[in-house]
Amino acid sequence: MQQLVKEGQLVAAIADPCGRLLWTCASGYMSRRAEKLNFTAGGHWAERDVGTNAVGLSLTLKRAVTVFSSEHYSPYVQDWVCYAAPIIHPITGECLGALDISTTWNKHTPLGQSATTQLAQSIAQSLPSVLPRAELELFALGQPKVVFRGKPVNLPPRQIEILCLLALHPDGLNLQQLHAAIYGDAPVSLSTLKADVSHLRRCLDGEIGSRPYRLTTSTWADFIHIWRALDTQRTNEAMAMYRGAFLVASESPEIQEWRHCIDAVMTQLIDNCDSPQLLLHKISQSVNGSIMARDRLIELLDRSQYN
Image (tube, rainbow, N blue to C red; front, side, top):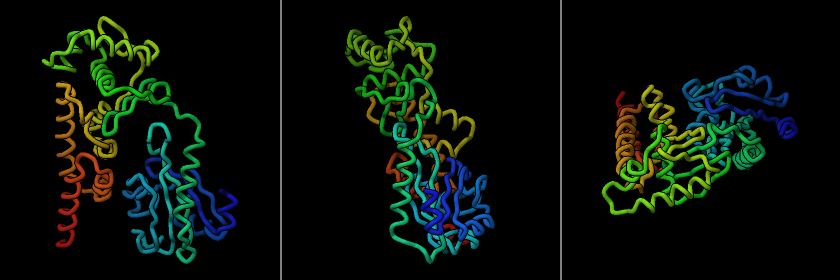
């Protein structure tokens, strides 16, 4: 990449998820320009810091973007064209940062965005294994996914429900409590539940205790993390994490109750959101709240026309 930058009169940068530049490399042609704008290691390029720019927009939308000339908010960058793409962890799907490649607008090429996207994907594929948040990671907002010791585990929906309920009850549940939490009054035998738990125990290397049933390994769950973020008013973090409803197809009485609570709070949060970028991100995800996000964005745009 450094050779490409030097020969192409470019500046390249890698930003963390908050938009802080961790590394930059520039040709002599772009180096002086980058230094004047603080487009150097340590510079902050989130949209909340400097307005519309490729680094910040890519991190907000979690997709590749091109920001050309006057599309930049800052007039000092309006003679640039910037291509950026998120660096997405191939296992967890987490956005770890963004790659940006920029030059002056007169050197714009249609291949710039494609090259930047491919380089970002190459970086993601070559990353060392990211230390997991916990041995067991549960992703249940939107598309469900279970990761154990860094590797995805394919499980049927019912067994994912069991893991989620055990994560919500770290002190454990006895057989009857777990049965009621999953099935309610449905006529399902206890032996069916026992068989599911036995299968899970084998998949998780024995890390499910008995009497009561409980997870015996460190566990991280997105639905618990988002609730804690909401409880501590970390609203931007909650908005970014909300990829969809909590196990939307689940008929478990307890999971339904949690799903309704999270959806209600997120609906209110979206309805009060004043950030067009976050609302656009919700719309682009096509998940729960996207229609409300669209309506809220229209409301903000209508309001701005009269101010």
